[in-house]
Amino acid sequence: MKSPQISTVIIALVFAIIAFIITSTISNSSVVVSLIVFISAFIAPLLSSSSNNASSTNNTSVPAQKSSEDVKTLYVGNLPYRANETAIRELFSNHGIVQSVRLMKDKHTGKRRGFGFVEMATSDIDKAISALNDTEFQQRTLKVREAKERPERTEPID
Image 1 (cartoon, rainbow, N blue to C red):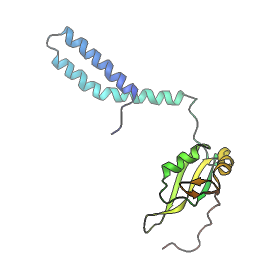
Image 2 (image 1 turned 135 degrees about the horizontal axis):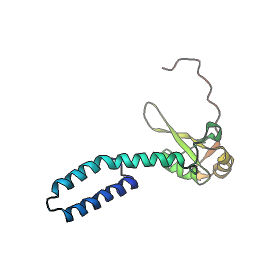
Image 3 (image 1 turned 135 degrees about the vertical axis):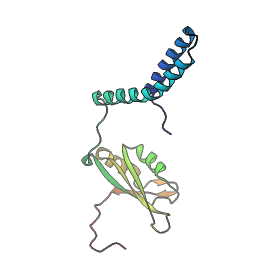
Image 4 (image 1 turned 120 degrees about the vertical axis):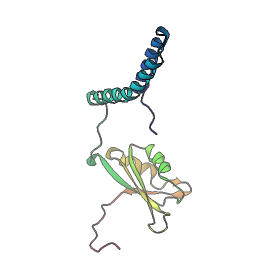
């Protein structure tokens, strides 16, 4: 289940305060309060989503998505078989902005194959390679270098 956004919570609180004021001033207000709560259940998410859309289009400080030219892929070899994507992401995040981590698995057994790929900002690639290549990680010596382009296959895949 998705957690409510702060604007939805604020709108719901405003409706709760209005309901409290009405109940304290009107003697037969249970129907009115029920109606306000019912209406607020529909209006609050609509109001908060429209205000979020407007603020996100007007906010210029939000960084733009990285284009494919700003990201390069690193090959990471000799990975420990017990390493997971989160551990590799944390390791590389110390040396730059990590876009994605893919650890390769055997398609028949599902076990990790001991290598993977990390997509990072182009400006951070050299720093990550020099900092992590030939270093020990979980009792294995990592091999980190820029990934080569995958050649196109000419034969059909079984």
